[in-house]
View: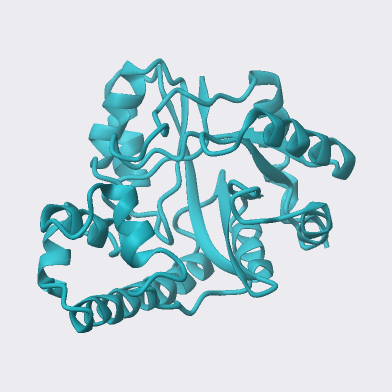
Length: 279
């Protein structure tokens, strides 16, 4: 079971790296990519935890960078990266600061709407040193009775177009791809159907250096997955799979529910050593 998309408390997951590793091993995952939002802070701890369990679970160092593509937000996954790459780390620090600033603005928007929430309360929902994300605010809104459940908090208050939504400064997708390639990794677009990407978008992203797309994701239907695999074959891209695991509250996203074939994974990994050499 090869799962190339997961999150820890370093970003907006609810489990620390060690806990995520235990859950993945229990679910039968043999290869897990730790792909926190705009940070690589959990990779070292996850790798140590996997080694301490005897090495049956391999950790792939990864990242998920929020970016803009033709005016809409898309997420670029990086796999097999060097977490210590100086250029990558420098830019990630800037991205994380933008996240923090946006959260402060969203809390103020909530307060202006009559919701009794504070930034300090949102920060208290952060169970690790990672950056603040909307899931932290969503959990607080549920706890205070402003939303029925986790998804309801997004739908009613903090999703795009909702009353407390605030735009965030993000890098262009081409820069995100270049950062991943520069760190020795492979760049893949996460859940492309959820971002409204069509073949011409995927073709242009491939021209910018993207080498794969996430075909198998819990929120993408069988027909969508089939169509994405067709696009991947047409464009010469790898079709990857990931559970996008954050927590048990995110319906359908469970560790071990999505898996990539070993042969396809080997072919994908082989691109990592030469992706940075492509003009």
